[in-house]
Amino acid sequence: MAAALSPTDPSSYSETAKCQVTSLHWDVAIDFSTQTIVGYVDLSVEKKVENLEDLVLDVRDITVEKVTLPGSGKDCQFEITNPQNVTFGSKLTIKLDSVIEKSFTVSIKYRTSPSASALQWLRPEQTAGKRHPYLFSQCEAIHARSLFPCQDTPSVKFTYTAKVRAPREITVLMSAVRGGAEPASDDSSDLVTTFTMSVPVPSYLVAIVAGDLESRKIGPRSKVWSEKEFVDAAALEFAETETMLQTAEQLMGPYVWGIYDLLVLPPSFPLGGMENPCLTFVTPTILAGDRSLADVIAHEICHSWTGNLVTNKTFEHFWLNEGHTVFFERMILQRMHGELHRQLHAHEGFLDLQTMVDTLTKAGNAPYTRLVPDLKGVDPDDAFSIVPYEKGFSLLYHLQTILGGPAVFEAFLRAYVENFKYKSITTEDWKQFLYTYFSSEEDHKKLDTVDWETWFHGLGMPPYQPNYDLRLAEPGRVLSKRWIEQPDDDLNVFSPGDINNLPSIVIREFLSQLILAEPPLSQAKVKHLEKVYNFNKVRNSEIRFRWLRLCLLVKWEDAIPHVLDFLNDQGRMKFVRPLYRDLYAWEEARPKGVANFLEHRQEMHNTTAGLVAKDLKLEV
Ligand SMILES: CC/C=C\C/C=C\C[C@@H](O)/C=C/C=C/C=C\[C@@H](O)CCCC(=O)O
Ligand SMILES: [Zn+2]
Image (cartoon, protein in one colour):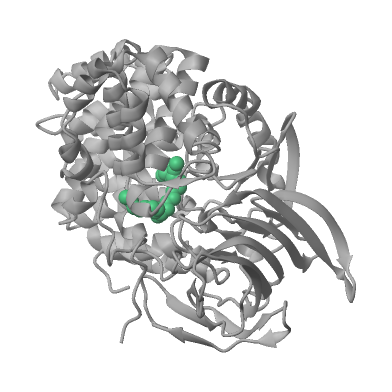
């Protein structure tokens, strides 16, 4: 019989009403030769009920060797049920007959599997330096259970310490403050590095990286880490980090995590960024050379408050993490570059939301367009999209508009963070606080005009269409209109100078408008665009992405090798999944897309490969 999932979190087996993990100690060795992590996790647990018979934990692809209660020195019986559940992993039940104390510790001796979904192992030849192997983790949403047995639900927060052993030429970092690295007592060719995270975090924020890493100081509390080959470029690209941190502190209160470092990962990293505390992980696709893609850094910095301090209680409330973070990210852009930048980014987000809603709806996944989706029986990775980011932002922007503008709403958001910091909350908690904060009769009348049911549970686009100020984008929009209206046999009116002085965000808007043109642009026009502006040479990933989508839209065969190059150069899902879907949708290009995927899937990140396989309708 299948094991039951938690009544309070559809993505976890843990029984958090009975007991909760409050701290964790991880004592492990990284074994690159077997692609496993081996050692102990010690969990300190607090009982919530008098008679606690079992401790139930989430595991996936983990071999448990022994469980002991260090307090009494006794071994515990344990069993693993649902061993093959692809979506949620398995349920580890530890028998606790003898525990009478309110708090106790269990020590679990275990090993991970080479196919642990949280981990990507790279051979030396897959790294930039080609000298040493590399390992990185991605635990959000529910992959921490493949790294260590845990209550893998964001409703539980714990502090942690760690001791990680690895070969001495490998630098190990975690989402925590790094202590020293000492030679292992039995073999000085290994180093043991220690870490401390003293702010309670959910399991999805535990992260590890191990590789041939260097760092550069980029601010009083910040370093950037990466392979030697990228580190100087990364230091220049992210030089605004401290300004962003200070701006975020003005908006949301003190930064509680001590250090804020950045790690630039190898190109297969599946996300733009991941807000691992003390050490944000980012994709190298934001190394544009001109800081124009640093909005990703602003976003990850804001998660230090929204997400990492105030956390969604389950991934059904993921919009609380992401909607607020996008809202604050755009406030940082506004403070640094002006309101028109915020307006243009918000507009771009709304266009992206429309595209995503169309894609999900056409694919039969309309339920994932809900702001608060039902994740019962659903892998959170399958439900993941920009919907919670942009629909969430739209809701907050709408509230800002009706409740009195930025000053009033910023004060509310600051109070929201203050009120819920260190907690995990639901959408209902958020809404109750909103009504309590805006308590006057007049404000309640305004709040009651909001169609909450449609915002939270409605399918498709939000029930309100914002009217953003697009003055900044005007030159790009005028140029796109000219291209759309110009007859195909009279294209010599365009010249490279048309886009010379346009900021990259405006070129993005230019290309987005061309993609949206109805009827679609002719292939002749797209070929002429290349002739005049040389887009195939542009390395800015956001421009490259839009340009290649436009080429596929008009079925320009010569563009396919450029698309495949981009797909094989990097593995960011935001770019890879739509391009593979476009290849699939074009019947003649489909075999090339499928063949390219099959050739490269072994090099891809697990999660990306699994989702692309579904996009290409291949067996997983
Ligand atoms: C409603 C959605 C339900 C669950 C999703 C929760 C987690 C999904 C999982 O796939 C993890 C996502 C992690 C995201 C981290 C960073 C993003 O900001 C990246 C955004 C995309 C990009 O910029 O490349
Ligand atoms: Zn985010």
